[in-house]
Image 1: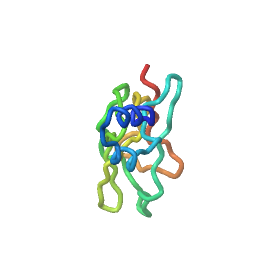
Image 2 (image 1 turned 90 degrees about the vertical axis):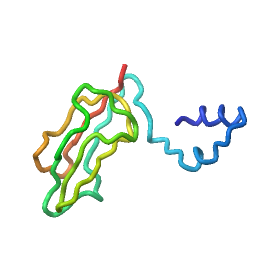
Image 3 (image 1 turned 120 degrees about the vertical axis):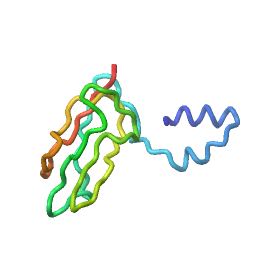
Image 4 (image 1 turned 180 degrees about the horizontal axis):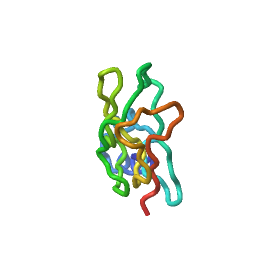
Length: 112
């Protein structure tokens, strides 16, 4: 949610307290020409490795902010990997392979 929309809703008399308390400027759709690479967060790394078990979004499909794009597994635990960026999925790391350090899991490009 952009700041300008929160201001408009506030001016119309809506209670925007929840929106302003939980607003994260990183959650957004990409601008035209922009792309974003997603990496494995440090919190999910494990000594036995992390594997992409299943993709929830196919290459070329639209990705929405805060939507689950894949399922990761490591140390016998499954994680839902959520994108905070919206656009189109351009690249997806192959399912079934361990993810190494500094490996791009997915690339999202602007949806024009």
